[in-house]
Image 1: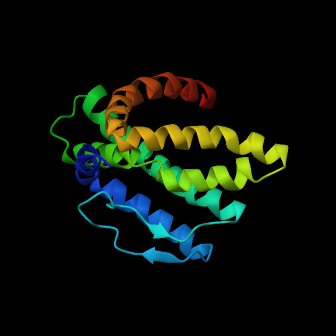
Image 2: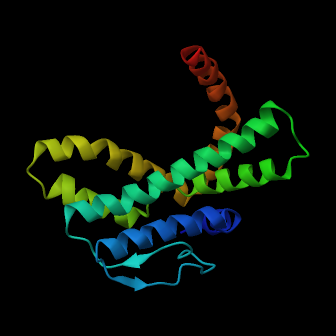
Length: 184
């Protein structure tokens, strides 16, 4: 792991800890043994939930998808308020907007699972599976998780999250008038 990875994880600690929390909850609900519960370590193991090897299909997908989904939803909601207030409406004095912007960027920076979890997903669904429907449904998610895990390794997800913060007000600007016209 690179020092950049650790620096980005420390800078975005709330998102890293929440991702680990959701992964830990999936492990507990699927009865997967967590081997090391020390999530806050200031090294390459920061926010890493060390669990046993998963040989079942469902939990191997859940351990990748549920923390990703929860961080995305929470990150998008907080980032939407923060970036719209600061970037679009120029409310620079709004402390709550800055906090939301930071938490949103933090959550979106820590979306992706560890590469070990992505490889377990690949083994369970794409390599050791004869069902074509499962392969067809999981392959796009595997691609997203694999690329995201590689980007996160080099700290590039921080840059994509900051870029996304600038795009959110524009995206919301497209949809909100359309939603308003539908309601009228």
